[in-house]
Every structure is written in C-alpha cells, then in structure tokens.
Length: 74
Image (tube, rainbow, N blue to C red; front, side, top):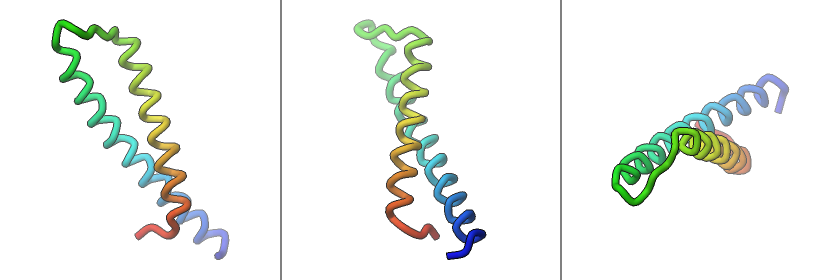
C-alpha cells in the first residue's frame, strides 16, 4: 500500500473512532444526567466533567484500536 492510501485509511479510521466516541459519550452523559436527578446520587460538575473526559478518551482509543485491527473501512 502506498503512503497516500495509508494516510487516507488512517484518517478514515480516526474519523470513525472520533464519531463513535462522541455518540457513546453523548449516550453515557444523557444516561448519567437522567439518573442523578434523584435524591440518592449527587455528582459535582467537576466529577461529571472528569467522567465525561475519561469516557470520551477511552472510547476513542478503544474504537481506534478495534477499527485499525478490523481492516479497511468503507
């Protein structure tokens, strides 16, 4: 595979990994916000931001790894 095709493939994998990360993080934060409205759980905004950044980063790394091992992307 030539250098240009490999760079395009890596860009596609990165774009898909970032997209999946945003979707998973959006669902996770929505679920978390809906569940903290009860009186049992209290989460500060700093904790919520930390969990959000952790989930976003970890899902992006996991999706990038899975997609790079999977092969070519349409």
